[in-house]
Length: 203
Image (cartoon, rainbow, N blue to C red):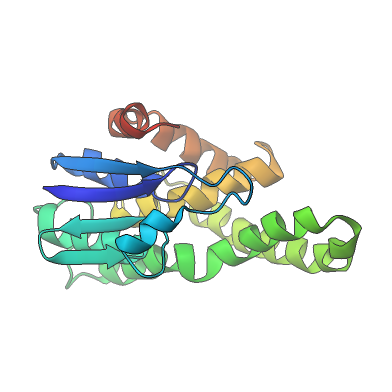
């Protein structure tokens, strides 16, 4: 059975949600963050040397990186769902958005999160970070103009991978700054599979 090694309050939510959408049986092994450092516990290193979550195990396959995991799940279990045909023009956009989520979009959000903990020492970095956030989130908001999802008319793996980015956008910018991202987050969080993932392994 598929195993998801899941760290609470982390990006591994996307993997449990993807599996619920796919309808594949899986088990969740949940790890608690250290109460002092807020980091993953050392036990995760027994699963993968980097000690990061999410980690997916499926038979003799062990995978890290959310984009790679979602790509694997969609190619292995989707049966033609959650991705355009690989030979289609839409697949090019799908691949771009799938990898953009972690490759580019997360960086300014993570910088905002970490630099905010520096207090006054981080103040000189705030304008540049705010500019990069506005650049990326503004582009994503525009990409959703007239769309329910980022690719085509239905949910894809790219949407699942971008979910954490859009949820972080609302956390930092509020619900009014990027209305298309807000509508997207509301839409995905109302999906039955998303709610099942929350019920199964926590908010």
